[in-house]
Image (tube, rainbow, N blue to C red; front, side, top):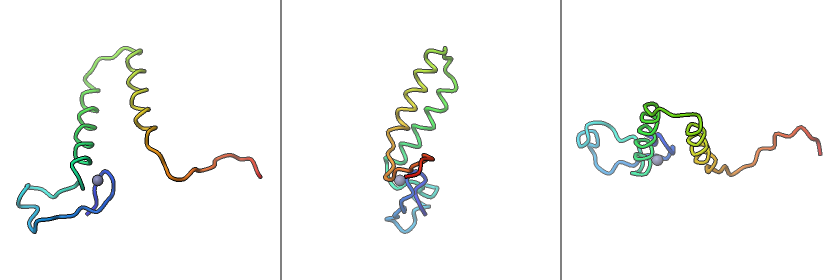
Length: 83
Ligand SMILES: [Zn+2]
């Protein structure tokens, strides 16, 4: 089984992991579990907040900033220029 957030294999330390928590572990760490918990909470609460356009733009910028902080190891060249 792999972590739903990062894709790393989940290591089970006890033989009966289903018995101790009632359902299978789906995250490799507290960080991945908390990421999912707080992301879902953010989505749920954002839907319930009445926002004017100014504050919609502010929140959109904040969310974009978080997404842009994810760096990819390879650079893909989409240019149509030929060398
Ligand atoms: Zn993970």
